[in-house]
Image (cartoon, rainbow, N blue to C red):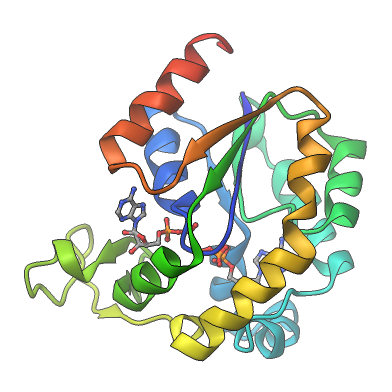
Length: 209
Ligand code: AP5
């Protein structure tokens, strides 16, 4: 199964992709997470990406396309994978189409106001990247999975979130029409309670496997 989670920042792509990854045993390929790892490690890709990510801008297409092409070629992707955060431009989608045929595209939708609220409350584990929301943390400051400290992502600062939203509407939203034309896209309300979203995804995937 080759899946894509499309949608604005904070729609829940990463959260849903992580659940599907665990349930179906296929890797989640989060380009945002890969870039954050590269920035932390100080690799050449990381150093190049940092100036864009910190401002909420998109990293150049050629960097992202090569990164995903290499990742998908890894043996753990032979049985399928979940793309989370790629493609983000029509040029990326066209390049992806040359080396991969997707089975289902989940298009997560949510209002901008809800996104700002969600992202200001998001906390991520600085060690393993697990994602939480302050409303469900009950004051806990450490990761449930590895004990690492929970932090606010630099690009979740309110002014950067607004920038990311503007970038989404201008550069990524056109992908909805692009993938609608394939007949493989299904809408998913990103504002649904998590378990309802998970049920909806499972129903769609029943017909794919
Ligand atoms: P990336 O990490 O992909 O950021 P993003 O798309 O902005 O996605 P987010 O991680 O913010 O949101 P999400 O939809 O995954 O939401 P989440 O599940 O965490 O990319 C970061 C940067 O890297 C980009 O800005 C760009 O610079 C660069 N980049 C990455 N890919 C690129 C590409 N292809 N091309 C160019 N540049 C690229 O959920 C958010 C919060 O809501 C969490 O707290 C979660 O707990 C909560 N939540 C989730 N679902 C629900 C629910 N149903 N109900 C209640 N709360 C929920």
